[in-house]
Length: 301
Ligand code: 13P
Ligand code: SF4
Image 1: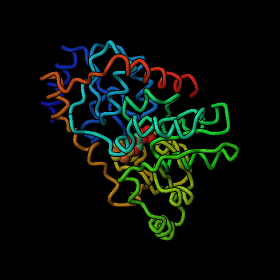
Image 2: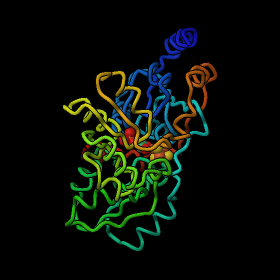
Image 3: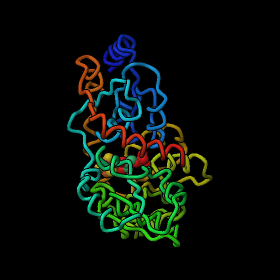
Image 4: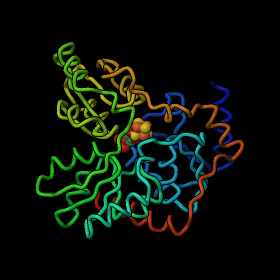
């Protein structure tokens, strides 16, 4: 491991590379990253990053977002098959049909979406800022794609608006059932239950707090509680446990592992810089439209 870290350091200097990693990445990857965070933080980092190469340790839509926001950088995704099934649940054609059925309604796309869907949308959002973005949009009716659960979470907090939702969902977060939350409450009576809004609305409704991965981590850090039950992918636990060894963290469901996020290993990051792979390329015209959608999010949030 020490040898790989040393090699990576040399490669980073040689290529003027910056390593960014999502909170769900393996601990060995988070440890070598220059920036670690949620999707919103990482998109802000990408928009302002120094260096020539961004090695994006996450899934494809995240690396694509970095390329859209930093078009002059080379963006590498260490594992080419690291995708997000939720992002694949709607196509640009599906969205065009939805827009035709709801003329005039602005479209918010979750950042977990393809570049083509972003290009067809008016504004992007992440779980950290979805409510703020939706509240800032004019008009009564909004189209929200592709995560129906996040859309429902936002819609419930904006009762004056009418939401057209798409039935997309994340397989990993969908594993949590309300019974799991009720059982966890019974077993850890004093614990705070922190849930990602990609979970089923019935699960989110039972939480003490719902938020993005970084917001969940921040909640635990600033809370006086001693125990926390975590309803999101297990990758958030590495930092939480390391930063607060005196607190107890329990995962709400043993299946909270995103197989795509876990594809990237330290060896993949080294290989990415050694072999300059896998380069993210985007269609310039589509990227221009998608950039406008992402920049609106950065302005509103
Ligand atoms: P965050 O933006 O909360 O980090 O979430 C990204 C994601 O893919 C959640 O499954
Ligand atoms: Fe996509 Fe779900 Fe994995 Fe997040 S946890 S990257 S939404 S599959």
